[in-house]
Image (tube, rainbow, N blue to C red):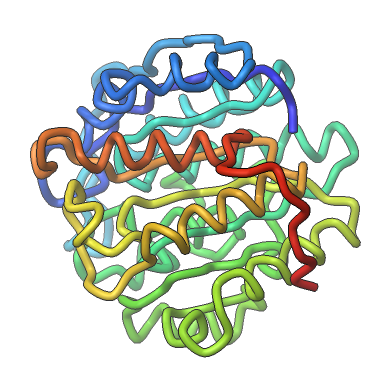
Length: 309
C-alpha cells in the first residue's frame, strides 16, 4: 500500500439508462471520504472532478447504442488522469457509472507497463460488463468496460486506442449474478476468472479472493480494484440503479477489503454506480466510505489473519 490517496471524481452517467450517477462523487465527499482517510494517517490529494467538452453524436451500426461519443470522451479524459495520478500515489476514482473503468484501468495499466509491473484487476460487481459494442442489447455502455480493457474486438475507431490492454487471465470477477448469454459465452472463452454468488456460497468469499491475491503475489503483480455498488446486496446498499438481489453481505464486503489491505498489493480503486437519488439518507454512501476505510487500513482488532491460499 502507498500512503497518498488521490481522489478523482468522474461524474459520468451517459453509460447508464437513468439519471443520478453523476452525483456519486459529490455524495462520497459529503459522506466524509477525505476526512476518513486522513484519520487513518493517509495524505489526501483532492483533485476535483473531471469534465469533458461538447461531443458530436455518432451513430453506431448497433442501433441500441447511445451516447458513444460522450463515453469515448470520458474514457480518454479518465485514462489520462489515471496515468498521471498512478505515478504520484494511489488514485481513487469516484463514479459515476461503471463505464469510467474503461479509462481508469487503461490509464493505470499504461503506467504499470512503463514501470515494468504487471497489473491485475479484481472486479467486484453483480455484472460482468463484458459486452462489446456489437453484442450489447441495452445499448448502455456501462456494460462494456471489462471487454474494452481486456482488448476484445469491436472498439477500434469508436473508443480511444487501447495502449495497454489487461491480460484477460489477469482479471478476476467476484459476485456475479446477472450475466447476459453473449457475455457468458465470451467469458467462457476469455480466460477471465469468474466467481458468481453460488461459488461464494459454496467456497466462501475469503477463499476465492485469497487465492487470487496469492496468484497476484506469486507473479509480483499489483492490483486495481473496481468496486460496483451493486456487488453488495441491495438490502444494505439501495443507492444504485442496477440492483440485483442476493449480493455480498456487509461482513463479506468488509472481509474482502481487509484482505486486500493486508495484501499490500492494491495501487488503485474505482468506486462506481452510487446513485444518491436512489439512496436512503446517505446510507449507501456512508457504507462505501466505511469499506474504503477497511481497504486502507481500518480494522476492528489488530490480529494475525489466516492464510487463504
